[in-house]
Length: 288
Image 1 (tube, one colour):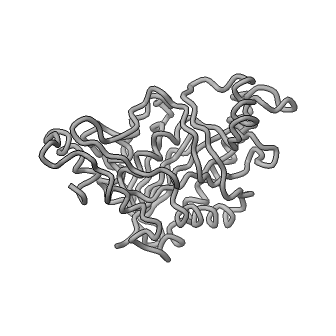
Image 2 (spheres, rainbow, N blue to C red):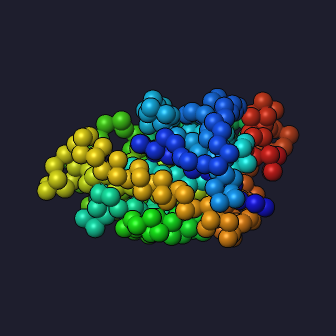
């Protein structure tokens, strides 16, 4: 099966240069995604790019249509999703401008739909390994080739937002919970990608030290934006280097991401809600 790269652009990254580029409107059973999706090709690989917050940054973190975003990428035939996110750092060594290839999450969001499934068709997927090791390694290689300082592995705390952390919260996440970076958008995105049987990797681009770091004070939006501008250029370079690496692999995924639903659905076939099943076909047709 040929790979099709889905790129979700975070704050500041609202477009890419693709061959045969076309902005496509996509609808899903969960409504429209954050924006139209830019489709095209890079180095012979199909690429679909979605600006997570919409062009012009119109969607707040808590209002993101994450189910529609993932379903839209799945509908277009995407097999591998690389999510690019701006984050704060809890570690001195993970400095502003660095990239962290996330491999674990702590989800502190509370007000967002976190599953495609529900009453009428219940499913439980494993999130013990929430990112794809193969795709994460390729993203790390692309980031290094783009000249970034890359940290392979890190725990991302997903907060509800839209406010930044208090200093007390920041210290808890860092000192008690042992998290490495903090952001507002990777959850429930990673959960939904697993339910949609997509390989998923998070490229976390550090913009600040959150508010725990006495030497850097509270998070300042102006300072974050300055680092963000530099990160966007690096993010574009990273994205351009991914397809050639993805072309060397293929599917099925050696880590089972594309078979995550094999034993996940619990509801008996005769008790499944037909209306919900119809919605689910866009992301789970293989097992339904």
